[in-house]
Image (cartoon, rainbow, N blue to C red):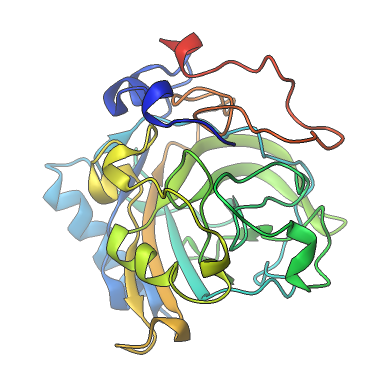
Length: 314
């Protein structure tokens, strides 16, 4: 995951345009904060949110967004669970995502399976713990947690009647040459089986992003501050295209103002086409999750060294 970001950069417009024929009518749009985080019976709030999104788009519930790369760190078999931390240390993050049908007036998509995965505070992914995150970071094994090296910071949640899922995780770290992000897939048509989600199809593959100011403040805190090096800001990322919520930028609210260590809540509405199918190829190239291939000794099952690079997609 080392390398000069500028040398392997792909224009952000190009990253979204190069989709290999797998463009999905999957959009991302901001919904009302209170409705998204309501823990009671939010049916009325969810309906109001969908209507507001639809009216603001002239009959289209979101600005449709092309699918982007799933990256080389995807693993099958993630567990269905709310808390995906497994004891990994970091700033707490509560993530609320709402899945709506972008082809049907932003109506909720109950039963949709939302899958997320992301790196730990030092830039390591479960399943690929020997891949070098770039800069200077301790070995993944030095974090002192008892997390399973194949499953931490990965999981599914099944959307409720209002299309809402909730995850408890930590604020992701970073690795060269990418900005801070979370990967997301939306599945429909399958079912929970043996603790994971089986069958159905993937409707959308995307990434969720974080405001630079919040990310850089968090990276001064423990344990993030033990990873030093050059952090890629949003404007320099080769996957994020600068489109705000429509490109996956989360809305964040600190749990306690003036104390980021207490954690954040983040939310976004995912507008998908439940009839569409996406392979996960997307734009943004292969290699190091949209850039330079990772370095170091590859673990079992790691992407091949000749994975397509950013330049190969141009």
